[in-house]
Amino acid sequence: MSAAAPLLAVAALDVSYGESKVLFDIALDVAERQVVTCVGRNGAGKTTLLKTIAGFVKPSTGRIDANGKSLLGLPAYEIARQGVKYIPQDKKVFSDLTVRENLELGSYATRDYDWDQVIAYFPKLTQLMDRKAGHLSGGERQMLMIGRAILGRPKLLLIDEPTEGLAPSIVEQLKEVFKDLCRRAALVIVEQNLPLVCAISDKVYALREGRIVAELAGRDRLTPRVCEQYV
Image (cartoon, rainbow, N blue to C red; front, side, top):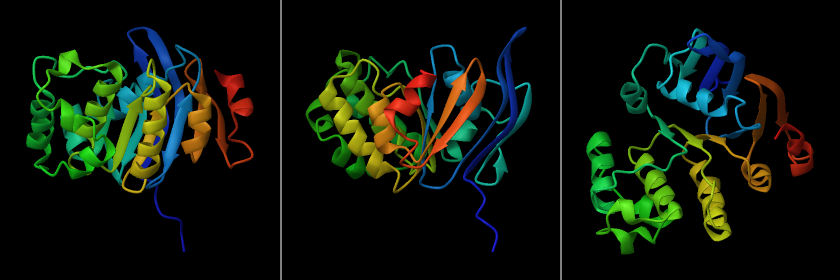
């Protein structure tokens, strides 16, 4: 019996910004309910990779398939409708709207008005429902962004630097959330916190200057000491 096709398959992917080529011959795959992490130094192309998969950047060449269907040429909103959600690094929310209104927008887009899982992951949001999102802390914004993204039961979450600048207690909370989320969806995470990476990942891709230079899997290889040579 042949192995099941990956949920996400990227092959021969090249991306340029104008005359500057930033991704070279990228190939990766993600299975259902798998946690895959991308590590590398600033400027390695990690964010560009996520944005390209999510439809915000157009590749020069290559293939991106999700759930057996090509994502090439689709606008970002259509990719999101197909169950591929992108959570950017900048922690931008609708600042003039309350937390409740931000979640309502997510519900409107997905027709999913069941917030039980959001509150189970982030109970603090219940205390913040009537607060303007622009007045939230960085950690609270990250909770809101992840909570909004999981509405609609996405098959794949692309999460860029989720723990950057956050308190250790919030990082620990997100670690537990990611461990549970992967029971429902695959995760592709760009992250610099190597202990977190090694605690949650099934596989790690290391990028350097726009190229994948290592693919690491297995408990013996997924250690901070092994990964730190790439960041």
